[in-house]
Structures are given as structure tokens and as C-alpha cells.
Amino acid sequence: MTDPTRVKSTTFNLNGKLIRGRNSESVISQVSKPRRVLKVLLCLVLLFGSQPSTVFGFGTFASDNALDPSGFSDLITNPNDFVSWGNPGSVITNITYGFDASFTNNNDIRDQVRLAFDQWDQASTTPNGSTYSYNRANGAQPFGDIRSIAVHEIGHVLGLHHPDQADLVNRNYGNAGGGLVVQNDQNNEVMRSWINSGDYNHVLSQDELTAYNYVYGSTDLNFTEVTTGTPDINIGAAALVNSNTWAQGGPSYFYRNNADHRQGGQAVSGVVTFNSTSATPMGFRVLHANWDYQNISGKPTKGFEIQTSGTNNPDPQWHYDGSSSRHFNTYANSPVGANAKDDLLHVWSDPEVAGVSTPFASSDVIHVGLEQDVWDWTVVSAEVQHPDGTSSSAPLLNVNQFLRTEVVGVTPDLGEADGITTRGRQLVTGRGLVLTNTTATPAELVEFGIATVDGLDLELPDLNGPMLAELQAKGLYQEFDLGSRTFDNGEELVLLFDGKADDNTQSIHLNTPELVGRELFVFAKTMNDAAIIGNFVLVGDTPVVGVNRVPEPATFILVSTAVVGFALSRRRQRRAA
Image 1: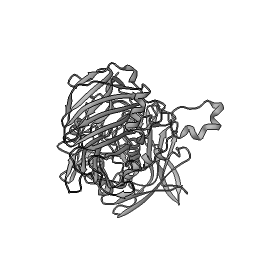
Image 2 (image 1 turned 90 degrees about the vertical axis):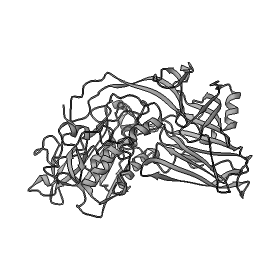
Image 3 (image 1 turned 135 degrees about the vertical axis):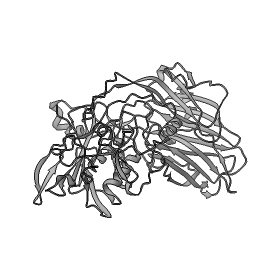
Image 4 (image 1 turned 45 degrees about the vertical axis):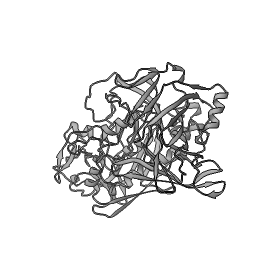
């Protein structure tokens, strides 16, 4: 079998120069790592926020596999043996990228790839921060996260290799005291050779930032999308040999010193190819949340601020700013900081009532909402701003899917460099919802219910009291008595539809297997001394995913363009409301 991480060199002529081309054979594969499923989002933050004593390293491609058959550079002996774009010491290196006809023209999917380029575009000015890795796994999903996969493959195009495989041949490097040393693999970097369906790894870890600093120094890589001509990096889709491979990517380059190939290579083009015959489709799934806020403290409202964790995408799929008669005129968001790189602060301001700019009265019901591009985003804080300069905490409650996932059929790590060994499959042994309070203020739960809404095509503005009343009238809504319960900071409760939760997880078994795999309208009424909140959440929305089958030969000519691209399973209009 061909080893897909091997450099397959071809010789061709470009402007009279001898070029060595890598046939884009570096892959990230759909393999599973045995690890315990993390139980709550807060625990995820704490776990991955704990830091190793040193940076755990990166690997780069050897520029000439004939000289180094492992495919990994020996950077200690040959510190310049890496492939990079532009000239060393350049202030800016401009690189273009574009989507070819094999890739979907759906803008939602393309935006996820654009965000992946943005990650690398900002690498030269991104601080390490104290958090090592933002990798997280909250349970199996029916898709591979396309942005995480794209960030990884662009890393290959920039010259980076798999650190877990580099570790096997002692070619995984970290920077200790200003010099390179061989380091162990941490196994949760963006550039590791595997990612499970449903996992996220959008944000460059400390290792990728260290690798960027080593390979590119202070050079700013400036990525620009082009729609005409030939881009430097081509994004496409095609049927790859192994169905466990999400995508593959790599650069083509010429040797910087043809007399000494261990002086590395200068990239001249790159390719990222997503697998149109992947065993699991690629895409993303959103989570919708809308909140009705009523102030019971007697103070008017001039603004609403919510900090969320889980995505750094500054453009939500949708934001809801209120009704036509009572709404906020301005919505904006901003990143939170160096140590919370997938957190955003969302701010609603400039309230208007019946066409007049004025704060909302304390008796008014205020509506705000968000739809973001990950299925497990959470609220970290929620503050209501008052005209007198004070603020009060809003008792928002997170409602997310609960998926207790185990890895079964685990096989030993044989150390293949191709990274496509299947170590096991994901088995979901518990399904339901998880309620968490990750805000500083306690939230008293006073009402909770679920409605199945498959086929109703609900959107963010539909998540409100009138829709709740309509679902009740149609007999689609079921209220559950969860007892008197106050959620303190960090407290969680799993509501099981079927299966089981971890032994140490607080849970209630609803015995409702009929809710598994359904699109759910969830309502939770919470309150504290300052406010009453109606939490309206749409869980289990159909993922935006791609085609992953090869058509019958008779139909190939008719549908070939759609087959190698990514098609929406359901098309929706996404807009700011």
C-alpha cells in the first residue's frame, strides 16, 4: 500500500528552474484516540487550560526524502531543512488561495475554510497565551468539523508535519531556552495526525505558534482569496483512496540551494483536497439560543453583554436584536483576550422603543439571541447595563446536547507514518441534554420543557414565547418537573433520553428514547433577584454537510461537479436579524 505521507517527488520546469513537487500526500485521518469523555464544557476549559511544563513541539517536512527517508526534518543537525513560503526575513509574504469548481459554492462552507486561513494569517502577531491547546471533544457527531480540518491542512501547505508521528522518530521539537530540543508529543495539537468526528480544533496551539515562529520568524503571511487566475493555494475536493481520510494537503517547492538540499525548499504552490468519499461527511452544526429578559430590579436597560465560549468566528450565523417595536439598534462583538482565544464578547446597545431612542423600561421584555457555528458553544457571562452606569447579572442557562462517547475496538498504535490507522470507532452510550451554568450568578430553574420540531424549519427569531404557546397548543411540547433547583457557577445536570451518564455526573433519566436524534425546541425559565429569563434553545439542527458517495457511472456526467464538492443537506437563508 502506498504510504500517503511519503513525499512523491516529481521533476518539472517552472520558469527554467528545477522544481521538486510534493503530491499533497500529507493527511489528517479519521482515527480515534482512547480517552475519557469530558463531562462539561467548564471541565474542558479547565482540562485543556492546564499547562505542560514545556512547549511540546512541532515537526516539519524534510525537503528531500532521499536524504531523510523518515520524511521528517532533523532540525537540530540541519536547522534550515524546512519548506517555507517567501524569502527568509521578508516582512510580508503575499499568498493567494482560491476554490476550484470541485468545491461547493455554498458560502457557509467556504466561510469556514476562509476562517482557517485567517488563523494562519494572524499567526505572526498571535500571542501564545497561557492555554496550550483549544482542542475539545464533547461527543461524536455525524460530521467532521471542516474548519478544524482546513486549519490542519493549511498547516501542511505551510510546511508543518504531524507532531505525533514525528515523536515516533524523535523529530518533534520544542524551543527550550532559545535552542531546539526533542520533545514528546502532547497529542492535542492542531497538527496531530487525527481528529474525531464532532471534535473541534480551530485555534492554533502553542506548538503551531512556535513552529510558525521557527519557520517564518516575524514574516507576516498575508492570505488573499482570488476568484480569477491561478491561485498559489488551490482548494478542491476529490475522491481519495482511503475513506478514513478527511483531506490531504501539501506544497510544491524548489530547493533553496540545489547543491545542498538540506538548506530547505521555497514553496511555489500548494493544494488542499477534501475527500468527497469520506466515510463521514464534513461540515458544521450550529446552536441557536434566544433569550427573553425581564428586569425585576426596577432599573431600566440600556445594553446587554454576553460572553460566549466555543468559537472565535466574529460573524455569527445570525444575531437577533429584538422585535420591530422594541429592539437594540447596534450589535457588535470582539475577541476576549490572549488566554481565551475562542471567546467573544457580544454587545447589544442603542435601545429603541417605537422608533424613539430610549432605554427599555424595567417592565419591558427584551429579546436578544445568537446562532453560532459550533454545536456546543456556551455562555460564560451575561450582564445587563443600566443608564446609571451599574450592571446586573442575567441568569442564563446553557442547554447543549449530551453525548457520552466511548471508543471501542481499539488497536495498538503501530507507528505508521501515514496516520490512517483506525484505532477504534466512536460509540455513543448516553444521549440527552446537559444543562450548565457557567456564569458567575446563580440561576434558579423554575420551568423546563421540550418540543420536537423536525421539519418546522425554525430559525432564531422563532425561538420565543409565541412559538412556545403554538407548540403547546399543537401538543408538541412536554413539560418536565425537575424539582426546585438552583444552578450555581459550574453546576451541571444531565437529562438522559437513553443510555447512561458517567458515574460522577449528576443526572436525571427522562426515559424518552423517542427524543434521540430529533430537532428539539427547549425552553428553560430561570431567575435570580434581578431578572427572569426565558431561555429558548434549538438543539440538534441539521448539520451543513457534504456529499460523500461516488455516483453510479450512468449519472456521473450529469452530477460530477456536485459529487466532488460539498452540498448542503438543507439550505437556509442566513442573515443578521
